[in-house]
Length: 329
Image (cartoon, rainbow, N blue to C red; front, side, top):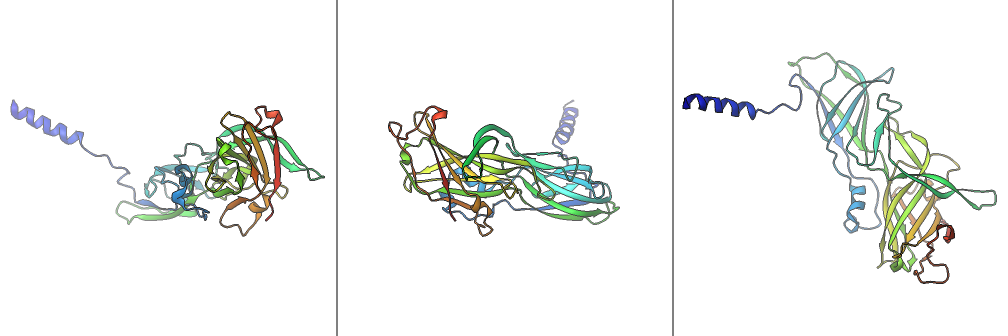
């Protein structure tokens, strides 16, 4: 009886510890991903001095999973999809010729939509609401404001593409077919510095709205889609330098010759009262020599304390004082 029980225990142990393969053993197609995580920008301050959430925008993080979409080269319709790790993996796909799009899928904010068509699949982000923001200048060069759709700042989505990939008829006995794809972020990363802030000790929190940004971006050819929006990003204070700064991600400036880029900096004091400052930084976004992606506002800002009788923080939104500056390059 003991011998029977022992044999039963051995069989149960062996079967319960069996590892299932992560891919079909008959597959002989391997996708190798070369994933570039770090954003290609130059920082105005050492990255180790940045808060952790800003460092992650520059350094990125390795995604846990990537989705692989196979599209018909003629109709551009989705034929099949599968999933691999950030390094790649074995994939199952029928013989044929395909266009491939590989993208990360574990962002908390950004999402990919319209994946059934190669020309329509795009990345976007969630909407934060609407806000009364500067939109353009009138004929007298006065700044005009209006309701603006505000989107949450996107997370990095890493994308790779390869066209006309041929998967021939093959068998288990054939050598493994290797497909090599490079992937990098779909976003542009910028550093914003507001360098001359007096009364910075009166700021309890700061955030910035950046207008004229693309709402979505196509994965296949990086076209800008769905019109322009504003994105929202939090700012940090550097009291020792009298400076406000942040790092923000964007799908890019929406391509329109009359598209102005305004920064609306909203400052809140300890009592919860607000004050805003507006700057035109269109020229810095449009400057082809700004390869470092640094947006710098050097015009002085004087932030009064909450007890000031002249131009201080206003609890009533309708009574906010606004200071408008054009930033010369």
